[in-house]
Length: 188
Image (cartoon, rainbow, N blue to C red):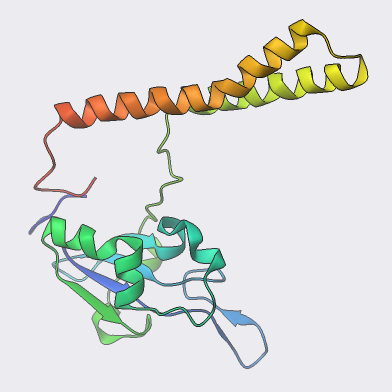
Protein backbone atom coordinates (compact mmCIF):
# COMPACT_ATOMS: atom_id res chain seq x y z
CA UNK A 1 0.00 0.00 0.00
CA UNK A 2 1.62 3.28 -1.03
CA UNK A 3 1.97 5.97 1.63
CA UNK A 4 1.58 9.70 1.23
CA UNK A 5 -0.67 11.91 -0.92
CA UNK A 6 -1.38 9.20 -3.50
CA UNK A 7 -1.95 6.44 -0.93
CA UNK A 8 -2.55 5.87 2.74
CA UNK A 9 -2.28 8.97 4.91
CA UNK A 10 -3.84 7.90 8.21
CA UNK A 11 -5.12 4.93 10.16
CA UNK A 12 -8.30 4.52 12.18
CA UNK A 13 -8.93 1.65 14.58
CA UNK A 14 -12.61 0.83 14.94
CA UNK A 15 -12.74 -0.56 18.47
CA UNK A 16 -16.23 -1.99 18.14
CA UNK A 17 -16.68 -5.45 19.62
CA UNK A 18 -19.62 -7.72 18.93
CA UNK A 19 -22.72 -6.87 20.90
CA UNK A 20 -26.25 -8.26 21.14
CA UNK A 21 -28.98 -6.61 19.13
CA UNK A 22 -32.66 -6.37 19.99
CA UNK A 23 -33.51 -9.68 18.31
CA UNK A 24 -30.88 -11.58 20.27
CA UNK A 25 -28.54 -11.94 17.31
CA UNK A 26 -24.97 -10.68 17.32
CA UNK A 27 -24.09 -7.48 15.49
CA UNK A 28 -20.66 -7.47 13.93
CA UNK A 29 -19.91 -4.52 11.65
CA UNK A 30 -17.52 -6.46 9.44
CA UNK A 31 -19.49 -9.69 9.05
CA UNK A 32 -17.52 -11.74 11.53
CA UNK A 33 -18.56 -12.60 15.07
CA UNK A 34 -15.98 -12.12 17.80
CA UNK A 35 -14.34 -9.09 16.24
CA UNK A 36 -11.90 -7.29 18.52
CA UNK A 37 -11.71 -4.34 16.18
CA UNK A 38 -10.47 -3.43 12.71
CA UNK A 39 -7.69 -1.12 11.55
CA UNK A 40 -8.71 0.95 8.54
CA UNK A 41 -6.04 2.47 6.30
CA UNK A 42 -7.49 5.66 4.84
CA UNK A 43 -6.32 7.94 2.04
CA UNK A 44 -6.39 11.75 2.02
CA UNK A 45 -10.01 11.78 0.81
CA UNK A 46 -11.10 9.58 3.70
CA UNK A 47 -11.66 6.47 1.56
CA UNK A 48 -10.67 3.13 3.06
CA UNK A 49 -7.83 1.57 1.04
CA UNK A 50 -7.44 -1.59 3.17
CA UNK A 51 -8.49 -3.08 6.48
CA UNK A 52 -6.75 -5.32 8.98
CA UNK A 53 -8.84 -7.27 11.49
CA UNK A 54 -7.39 -7.61 14.97
CA UNK A 55 -8.55 -11.25 15.09
CA UNK A 56 -6.45 -12.09 12.02
CA UNK A 57 -3.27 -10.54 13.41
CA UNK A 58 -3.61 -11.68 17.03
CA UNK A 59 -3.40 -15.48 17.24
CA UNK A 60 -4.69 -15.61 20.81
CA UNK A 61 -7.77 -13.44 20.15
CA UNK A 62 -10.16 -16.38 20.45
CA UNK A 63 -8.77 -17.16 23.90
CA UNK A 64 -9.09 -13.63 25.28
CA UNK A 65 -11.93 -13.04 27.72
CA UNK A 66 -14.83 -10.84 26.69
CA UNK A 67 -13.60 -8.26 29.19
CA UNK A 68 -10.23 -7.85 27.40
CA UNK A 69 -9.42 -4.18 26.76
CA UNK A 70 -10.22 -2.80 23.34
CA UNK A 71 -9.03 0.30 21.55
CA UNK A 72 -5.44 1.46 22.05
CA UNK A 73 -4.54 -1.56 24.20
CA UNK A 74 -5.71 -3.97 21.50
CA UNK A 75 -3.93 -1.94 18.78
CA UNK A 76 -0.71 -2.19 20.78
CA UNK A 77 -1.16 -5.93 21.36
CA UNK A 78 -1.87 -6.67 17.70
CA UNK A 79 1.14 -4.63 16.53
CA UNK A 80 -0.94 -1.97 14.77
CA UNK A 81 0.59 0.84 16.84
CA UNK A 82 4.11 -0.19 15.82
CA UNK A 83 3.01 -0.49 12.17
CA UNK A 84 1.57 3.03 12.19
CA UNK A 85 4.66 4.46 13.91
CA UNK A 86 6.99 2.79 11.40
CA UNK A 87 4.89 4.03 8.48
CA UNK A 88 4.50 7.53 9.93
CA UNK A 89 0.72 7.28 10.02
CA UNK A 90 -1.34 8.99 12.70
CA UNK A 91 -3.54 6.42 14.49
CA UNK A 92 -6.95 7.38 15.80
CA UNK A 93 -9.26 5.08 17.76
CA UNK A 94 -13.01 5.45 17.21
CA UNK A 95 -15.74 3.58 19.08
CA UNK A 96 -17.82 2.33 16.12
CA UNK A 97 -18.28 2.34 12.35
CA UNK A 98 -20.88 5.11 12.60
CA UNK A 99 -18.21 7.63 13.64
CA UNK A 100 -18.13 10.90 11.65
CA UNK A 101 -14.55 10.22 10.48
CA UNK A 102 -15.81 7.17 8.58
CA UNK A 103 -18.86 8.62 6.81
CA UNK A 104 -17.34 8.40 3.31
CA UNK A 105 -14.86 5.59 3.96
CA UNK A 106 -16.46 2.83 1.87
CA UNK A 107 -15.33 0.16 4.31
CA UNK A 108 -17.19 -2.73 2.65
CA UNK A 109 -15.27 -2.41 -0.63
CA UNK A 110 -11.77 -2.25 0.89
CA UNK A 111 -9.68 -5.42 0.74
CA UNK A 112 -8.95 -7.26 3.98
CA UNK A 113 -5.22 -7.77 4.55
CA UNK A 114 -4.58 -10.94 6.49
CA UNK A 115 -1.58 -13.15 7.22
CA UNK A 116 -3.56 -16.00 5.69
CA UNK A 117 -3.87 -14.23 2.34
CA UNK A 118 -1.25 -15.64 -0.04
CA UNK A 119 1.55 -15.27 2.48
CA UNK A 120 3.24 -18.62 2.07
CA UNK A 121 4.55 -19.90 -1.27
CA UNK A 122 2.80 -22.83 -2.93
CA UNK A 123 5.73 -25.23 -2.40
CA UNK A 124 5.48 -24.74 1.37
CA UNK A 125 1.85 -25.88 1.52
CA UNK A 126 2.54 -28.77 -0.83
CA UNK A 127 5.51 -29.94 1.27
CA UNK A 128 3.49 -29.84 4.50
CA UNK A 129 0.42 -31.58 3.01
CA UNK A 130 2.50 -34.24 1.28
CA UNK A 131 4.47 -34.94 4.45
CA UNK A 132 1.31 -35.22 6.52
CA UNK A 133 -0.34 -37.51 3.97
CA UNK A 134 2.69 -39.80 3.68
CA UNK A 135 3.00 -39.96 7.46
CA UNK A 136 -0.68 -40.88 7.82
CA UNK A 137 -0.42 -43.64 5.19
CA UNK A 138 2.69 -45.09 6.86
CA UNK A 139 1.08 -44.87 10.27
CA UNK A 140 -2.05 -46.64 8.99
CA UNK A 141 0.05 -49.34 7.28
CA UNK A 142 2.08 -49.83 10.45
CA UNK A 143 -1.05 -50.07 12.55
CA UNK A 144 -3.13 -52.38 10.36
CA UNK A 145 -0.55 -54.38 8.39
CA UNK A 146 2.09 -54.56 11.09
CA UNK A 147 5.02 -52.26 11.64
CA UNK A 148 8.10 -52.62 9.49
CA UNK A 149 11.41 -50.80 9.53
CA UNK A 150 10.67 -49.26 6.12
CA UNK A 151 7.27 -47.79 7.11
CA UNK A 152 8.78 -46.48 10.36
CA UNK A 153 11.63 -44.82 8.46
CA UNK A 154 9.33 -43.28 5.86
CA UNK A 155 6.93 -42.06 8.59
CA UNK A 156 9.81 -40.46 10.48
CA UNK A 157 11.09 -38.71 7.34
CA UNK A 158 7.58 -37.54 6.47
CA UNK A 159 7.13 -36.16 9.99
CA UNK A 160 10.32 -34.14 9.50
CA UNK A 161 9.09 -32.59 6.25
CA UNK A 162 7.06 -29.86 8.00
CA UNK A 163 9.85 -28.54 10.25
CA UNK A 164 12.36 -28.76 7.39
CA UNK A 165 10.01 -26.84 5.10
CA UNK A 166 9.57 -24.21 7.83
CA UNK A 167 13.37 -23.83 8.21
CA UNK A 168 13.84 -23.49 4.44
CA UNK A 169 11.07 -20.88 4.28
CA UNK A 170 12.62 -18.92 7.15
CA UNK A 171 15.99 -19.03 5.38
CA UNK A 172 14.50 -17.77 2.12
CA UNK A 173 12.69 -14.93 3.91
CA UNK A 174 15.81 -13.97 5.87
CA UNK A 175 17.92 -13.77 2.72
CA UNK A 176 15.23 -11.75 0.95
CA UNK A 177 14.90 -9.32 3.87
CA UNK A 178 18.66 -8.72 3.90
CA UNK A 179 18.67 -7.92 0.17
CA UNK A 180 15.62 -5.64 0.09
CA UNK A 181 15.84 -2.32 1.93
CA UNK A 182 12.91 -1.54 4.21
CA UNK A 183 10.12 0.32 2.40
CA UNK A 184 9.86 3.96 3.31
CA UNK A 185 7.09 4.90 0.92
CA UNK A 186 4.70 1.99 1.43
CA UNK A 187 3.37 -0.73 3.69
CA UNK A 188 4.09 -4.29 2.61
